[in-house]
Length: 145
Image (cartoon, rainbow, N blue to C red; front, side, top):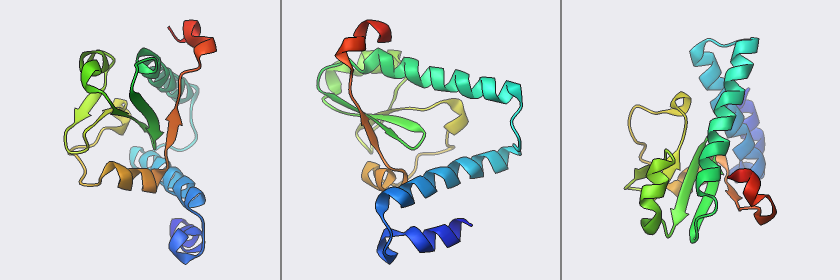
């Protein structure tokens, strides 16, 4: 099904990038579930997904207010770029790790860990999975903290 959709929606074959990124994202998620042997989700699995999304929300809330950084969700990882050097201790304390080849910080849960770093650039990862930049909503700042 993935191959059929990729042939139909790939940007090089007349499709659009956003649709292809969504197909790649869904394929990565479905592949991860298939590898783990997951089918229909139990209440415990749904509760685990909620816990994981809460981990991401808390990690973002700890850093979103930092000046000069760019926070973006790329696939199932959070990447931080920009002027991160002054904030390296804060980022590390919030659970972010530094990827020296990409010159960027990232956060992901153990479910999305990889055995070794990939060779793709951050731009290549963005192109494959799509990217959504996050900005602090100053009206809700007290809620985030």
